[in-house]
View 1 (tube, one colour):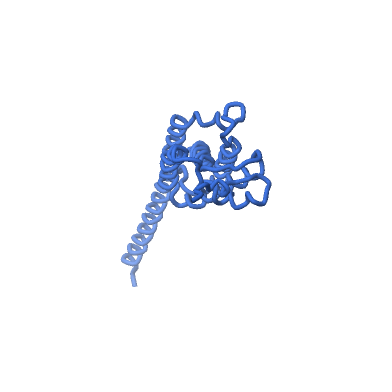
View 2 (view 1 turned 120 degrees about the vertical axis):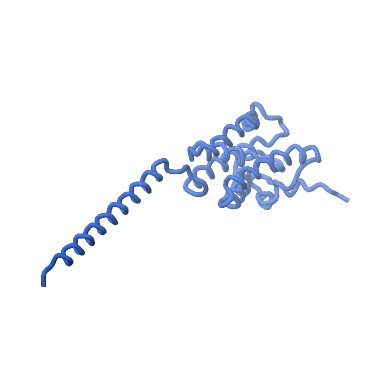
Length: 198
């Protein structure tokens, strides 16, 4: 039985490679290749779905399809397979999203991603990647993740407004002052009515 699923990958600029835009992350060349992608993929997915839970499915889908589509457009002839493009997309999204949102917990995730996966950046360039490595897939994932970080910047977790509490306090004070003024007016009316001679 032939267990070679390589033809489910992306073959750039050819009709036979279109389906791979959707299927390529599910196909790996060996168990070693699969294992190498599994742990970072699960960890980055956990970060995404924990810290960006309300928008995580949209981001994950956009990176999945965006990575495959860009690889289809810029890849060299050959079958591009594996989930490494999604890993790059998630890493770049988590990094840039934390920086752009300027929210302390998300910035901490950005720094953690830099510490753990900063070395990935070299495999995005043909000068440093192996001949058998799809550097185009890595670059496509990085681009897709960066675009998602920019496009979804207004959605999901946001940095708290440092002056929000002060504004609420001012509103409460204004309401209390208004209530005090109303009480005084009512008291004055009561006094006037009590001193009136009929």
